[in-house]
Image (cartoon, rainbow, N blue to C red; front, top):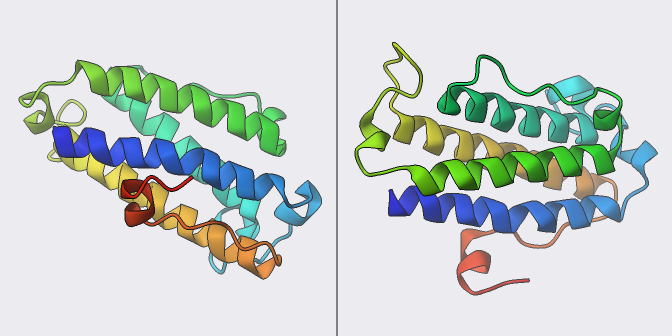
Length: 160
């Protein structure tokens, strides 16, 4: 459980770094299609970010027993500020959820009847987030705005 919490602390550290890098690019450029090959929502940076946040929200809702993921106002997801605020809410709720878990919880099914354990699902979603964050970094680099480092070692060394 400690490793899972630590991994999500890393994700929480990376979130504002990524959002800060995105803020340096005009939003119309973040909506440009095709920057991320095979990416979500036409391969735009913003679309990929929306997908990343949506998946985190959906899985958190499943883990907490909600019948469905909270649906943000689609108009808010059309802009970086709305996505950023939604992601922060998801992150805060996930931190509260993680604080309640015990070692035994990680071995229970992620959702009723699932073969995947909660621990496996927590690792899966963290990996999914890292994957799409890397795609967004590729998109930012293509836009001429390379982001800061997001390596775990940057986190361990106290990178800001």
